[in-house]
Image (tube, rainbow over all chains, first blue to last red; front, top):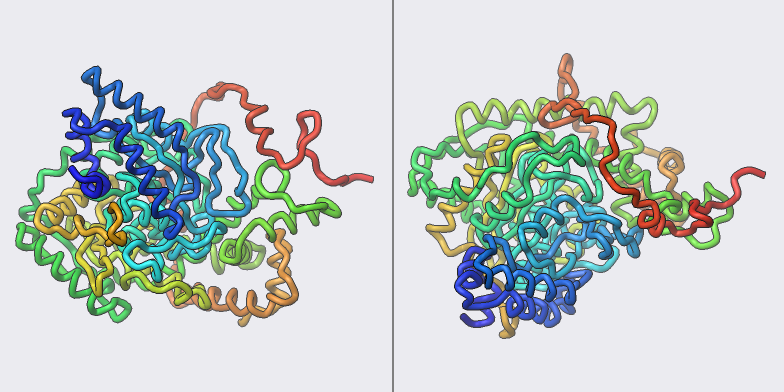
Length: 492
Length: 95
């Protein structure tokens, strides 16, 4: 197999080669580290590389295979979003506030994937504190989209999505509070899954909005996502919101059989906000699913329009509370020569946080402040229930809900920076899924003007298997998930 | 009700943030746009709707109050920007 083929192979394919000793994890790890070295200067997708540890972990994986051991993720190169705490390895969350923060423990997701045998190559760039849809809010500079470096990769897991598309890793992790896995997966042409709220432990994930945050897998195929999710899931005594359910073998759901599957198409997701060329690709993808036996049914999610307003009260309110911990005292950035304690707080926070993070703290503080709590926060939580009820109703008649992951393809840098609300509109099709706590994924649905489009599939709570199987069916019938950006004649 | 520069400065102080004189105009204008967006919620009737704070309406799980982790005091203190004799160091607060 050529280097390019190895760099763009799925984890399942690499596993077969590792098991057959046709390639070693050490060879793979060296190859991916070279790919990062060659392309990160132009893409800025990776913030920290852990080459020595990765090579040591790869050799350990190879020893397992030579002993006849090793499971599906053993020895597979992976990058983590820099929101996951990694013991002894700098974890920045894309912020000046945490530029030099070195956690004392691993996030549960990191520990679980480590136990499953992955080789961690390093940590990926992201929007600051996961607040953004373009990766332009990172303190460490924007990530470029490998399909066209004049365009954004999406966000907030944009570094993860760009790195995967550019062949810098076989698997990457992301987090999704309002679309931060699905929208960048769509814009970079990969598969990304936001699990049901509670499926994956949040312990050690730097908090943004605690009732919405979920970590999930991003990979080249639905099958790889299923393997990753199985490794990441499960109850965690360290996260009291993690669901008390066994972590199933999600790959067992990938039968490819979707005969009779009822797919709901919300008329609100095919409105004027959607780029007509993207809409056409989504229709093609749906036709494939229909040809495979699925039934397409128009449905109504009457309060979809309110998801964005609801989200932009609840998420900033929770963020303002979570980010109160950054006080310049216990960890994180501290200003120079504070005059007194008040000055220490004010300047450490104003100098340590970027513009978008400060805006959301302001909005959240306002929504929670005396006299406004009922009008904003309580009201938004009531509308959240109405939106969630829309989904519950819809799922009495369908098994899966489908639509676009984002209203368009990747846009150019700066295009949406002047008006925060225009940036928030990037997530109009994804936010409601977080409000309702449902699982959602984005799977490639072809290209428009050479840029990737993503189909979003939304499932019932704790029914990731059904949407993964539908995406798997699409990936058996099309080559869309196989498309990779031209890396300028070099490797991938 | 449009938001004023005064309102924004008051909220900023509550959030322990400072806004420079030069950026106050722009911050207020962009803050106002976000408020205009969220004010759309006023057009929906929510009488008798119970607020939803957790997507699955989960209840808090309790556990026995026992020690589950080893003492990590030194490792955690290592992240402090300033410390002395094992305590966090802050500017003088009492004269």
